[in-house]
Length: 567
Image 1 (cartoon, helix red, strand yellow):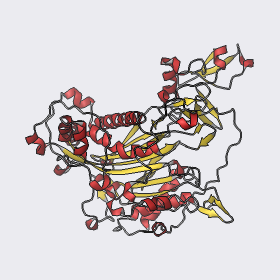
Image 2: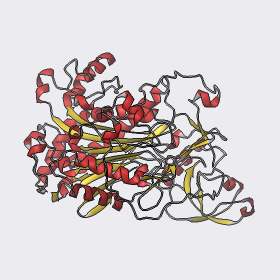
Image 3: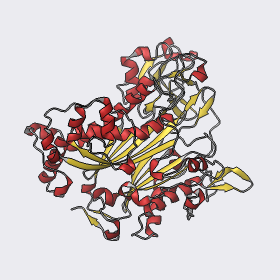
Image 4: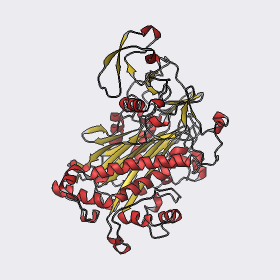
C-alpha cells in the first residue's frame, strides 16, 4: 500500500498563539557532553564495541510497514502523516499517528509501543523453574506459556529478570490462578540516536508484565476488597478471587494502586539495567525519555521520565523534554504528567551531590544562588538554597561559591552540570562532561514519576473523552487546550461506529502541528495561523476512556452515542 494513500486530508485546526522565536542571547557558554561508548567520537578512548545493534531501526510494529515503506516514511521533504494500517486492531481502539522531523536527524528518533498484556500469576511460577533458554521459548508460546496477543508481541529474545515467588501453586492449580488483562501504551523519545528507544519499545512491556504478575494474586484481592468496601461493583469475569493473608493494619495502609505503582517503578529500573547490560555487547549510544500509560482495573497509571536539551560533541541535539499526557473530557483538559527537568528536580539533584560530593568534585557547587556570582562578589552576602530548602537563606560568598552551580541557567533553560537539561530517562550510561570528565548518569534517574486516575470516580464517560499522549514535537506548538479542541472537534464530526475515528483524531493533531510547507521555501514549515510549525518528530496516541473503563468485545455492537455509566 502506497504511503501517500495513508496520508488522510485533514481540516487544519491550529493554535492562535504567537510564533515562537529562538533566543540568541546565551547567558553563558554551554558545556559539552560525550558518550564514551562511542568509539568513533572519542578515538578509541575505551575498547571498541560490536557495531551491530540488537534491534535494527524500525517503526512501531502495529503500523505493519515493510522495509520499503519504512524508507519512504523517512522523507524529510514531504513528511507524510503515518497511521496504523489496521486501526481496529489497536488496543482499546486507540488512535495513533506520527510524522518524521524536517531534517534534524536522518531517522525518526521517536518510538512507541501498544500492547495488550495477558497477566497470570502462574506465569511467574512456571518461569522460575526454567533455564534462560526455556524462558525465551515460553515467551514465544512453545512450552505452554500464556503470552500476549501475538499481533502485539515482538517475537524476540528480550531478557526478563529471574523471578521468585513465595507460595507457588502446583501445576494442577494453574488453571485456577488469578488472571487479568491490561493495556500498556508507551512513547519513547530518543536522543543521540534511536537505538535505546528501539530497545525500550521492544522490551519495556515484558518487564512491566513480569512485575505485575509477581503481585497479581495480592493485587486482585486488594482491588476486590477496596471496591466492595466502597460499594463499587466489578464484573466477576474480570478476575478470580484469590486468598491472601493480610492483617487489618496492612489493608488500611497499602492499596492496590500502590502495588501497581511499585511494579511500574521496578520495571523501569529493570529496563534501564537491561540497557546497561546490553551496552556491554551491542552498540547502544545515547538514551531516551519515556512516558507510559497503563490501563488496569479501571485506573490509568501514567509513568514518565522526561528530559531536556543536550549537546553532544560539537553538534546540538534538540531534545526538548516536554512529552506529555493530558485528559480531555467535557469538563475541559487536565494534565496527567508534568515536565521533569533539572529545575523541577533541584532538590533531588542537590541531595545527590550532598551525599555523594565526588560526583561534582571541585568543579561545581551544589548550591543554587539568587544571581550569577563573580569574583567581585567575594565576601559579600548572597541568597542561596540547598537540597533541604524550599525558601532562601543568606550566606557570605566564599571562593568555593564561585564554581559553576550544579544547576545553571543558559538560554533561559536550566541545565545540569552546565551541559544538559536531563533529569530522568533510560540509557546514557557512559555520558561524561567533556571538560571535567564527570559521570552524568548518577543524576539521571530511571525511576518514573507516576500519577493515578481512577475512572470509577467519573460518573459518566462518553466516546469523546480521551487521553492524549504525545511527544514534544506536538506540545512545542500546541497547548493542552488546542489539542483538546482538535480532538473533540474531530470526534464530533466522525461516525461513532467507525473504529478508525481515534486514529483520525491523532492524524489531525499531527497534521496541525506539522503544518504546511511554505511557498517558495520547501524547508520551512508553517501553521495555518502563520506561526512556525514543529520541525521535530511528532508522535501521538489518542486513547478513548470509554474503552479503558469497559474494554470492547465487539465494536459493531457498541452504542458509542450512549453515555457509559460508571456507577
